[in-house]
Length: 68
Figure 1 (cartoon, rainbow, N blue to C red):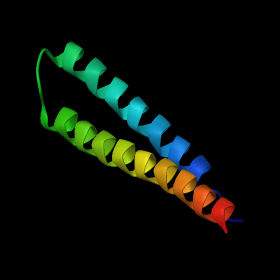
Figure 2 (cartoon, rainbow, N blue to C red):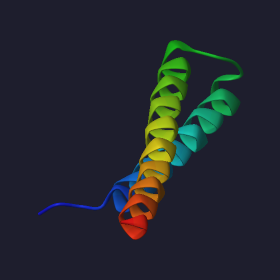
Figure 3 (cartoon, rainbow, N blue to C red):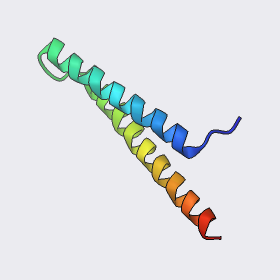
C-alpha cells in the first residue's frame, strides 16, 4: 500500500515533536544535557526536516499535476 507524501510527512512531524518533548523532559529530569538528550534532539531534527520536506513535496506534486 502506497501512502501519500502528505500522510508520511505528518507522521514524521508528529514523531519529531514527540522526540523533542521527550528530550525536554529528559533535560528537566537530569538537570542538564546528556548524550541521550543530544541523541533525541538529532533524531527530532531529522524527523522534522524530513516531514517538512515531504509535506512541501506533496504540495509541489499536487500543483504540478494540476497545471498539466
